[in-house]
Structure formats: structure tokens, C-alpha cells
Image (cartoon, rainbow, N blue to C red):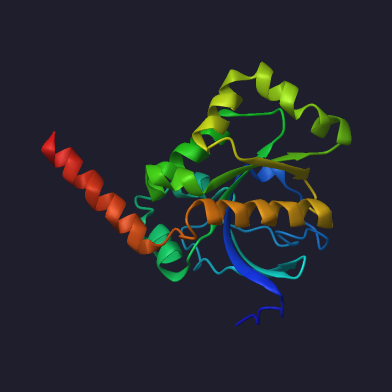
Amino acid sequence: MEKPPECHEPPLTVVVFGNSASVQYEPENLLLGKEKPCFKTAEISRIVPSQREISERHISVINIIALHEALQNFPSTGHYIGQLVNENEIHAFICVLRLGQLTDADKMGLEWLQKAFGDKVLQFVMILFTYESEEECNTIKDDLKKNPVLEQLLEKCGGRYHTCNKKMNKQSEMSELMDKVMHLFNENKQQCYTGQRRERQCLQKSENESGE
């Protein structure tokens, strides 16, 4: 098993999902590294977090970018989702989107997350917009005002967002992202998303449906 680096800040566990075109895998990528996950075969291997270090903080990163697209071809996603939440206490779900290029697949990704983890998972979600040029980054507030669909998507996640370049190689941007994740954790009364929380939501949903 990969040994976590020694760090001084509290450790965090994050799930990263969203649009694979929004990120660039390379050795300098501080959050995701150089290995792009492969979810193309029916035998999807056990999802194992990678261990990263950002600003002296240990981060367990569960990269499931494009997983929802792969699982559409399989009859059940319960096994993979159950394994993921039962083995990890998740501080935040980071939804990676390409700045200014919201697609139908992006919207479906967030809908898939709600179906797989329950509606209350949205209180743990942060949108991460990636860009290629500084000019793109500077226009994000204007983009939100001009794009009601994007604004609505952001509202579903409590208005929480961050921006970084798609290479994810700037220490300052990644450090600020982790600070925002820590702030979100404190907003959620230092409660993580766990398998027990998901089971309660599934039970509640089943009871509501049976009572209709």
C-alpha cells in the first residue's frame, strides 16, 4: 500500500469527477498526477485512492472522472459506489468542468452523482472550473451572468466554486482549493460523506416512494 507523506495539516479525502477534457494528466499535475484512469472494460478494478501532498497537507484523491459514462453500459453501479463510500470518509466531491464550455454530459455527470449518492451529496460538492489561459479565468463572473444554465448548476452546489489551470500544476491554486475544501468540511459541521450516510438516504428515499 502506498505510504502517505508526512504532513502538518489535517488529511483530506476528495472524490474528483466530471469532464475528462477539463484536465491534463502529467507528472506536474498536483491533484491527479500523470495516470489517467481507465473505466472502459467491464472488469473495472477496485477504486484505490492515490496519495498526494499539497501545501504540507496529505490528500487522498479518488479519481472517478468519466466513471459515470463507463457505468452507463453496465447494469448496476451499486457495487462500485458502495465500495467507494464504505472504504472512505469523503470530505468533498470536486466536479471538474471546462470553463465556458458546459456540455450536456457535464449536466448528466452531476445528475448521476445525485442518483448514485443521494440528493444530499450536493452539500459536499464543489465546482472546479479549469482554464487554459489567464484571460479565460478573468471572465468567469461574466460567464456566470451570461449563462443561466451554468449559474443554476452552481446554485445547486451552494455557489461553491474554484478555478485552476487544466494542468493543475500551480501550487497556489491547489492550496487554495484545499483551503476551500477544509472550509466546506467545517460548514458541514466536520461531517464526512460515508457509506452509513448513503444507506440512510437510500432508506429514506425507499420509504418516501412506498408511501406515495
